[in-house]
Length: 177
Image (tube, rainbow, N blue to C red; front, side):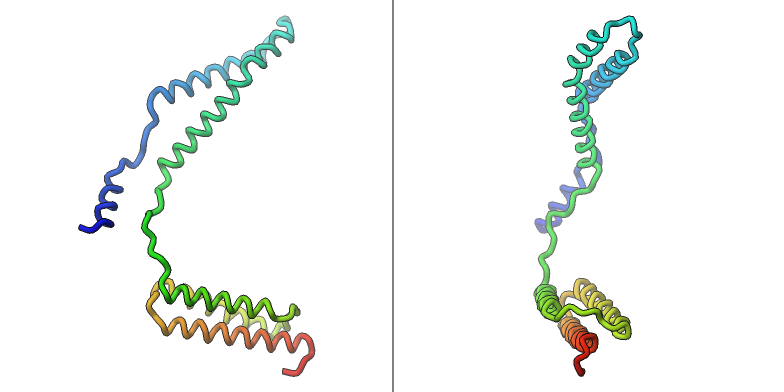
């Protein structure tokens, strides 16, 4: 059993949910009770002087803030307990994936260096197809990070996309292709 298996076994042994202590729920219940009393003060008949109601509201206002903070913390705790934590060990990208990232960066730089022009509509389907091919090849590299063939196909696709974009820019600006 290696270190990864030991860690996985310990993670599986952790409880699925954690229930806050009873004192936390008692505190929330007390704050809710105080909130209900404050609401009743808002419904006081006109015979009670307005200054008394205002003074009581001012006295209880900090507790209303504490109730909001307490409920927010309880909700955050519930989210932390319920949402599964990501695995601490994620494999680093392979050499092929890093090379694909470098190719993508170089392609983006080359595309940014081209003059901005509205490309003719007859080029759009081919450009979209090449973009979709590049995305598919990147996904395939992620699934099979040892296939050098895929890296070559990605490089070829980026080169074709760049060449076609250059032709489209030249056509849009009226230059001979």
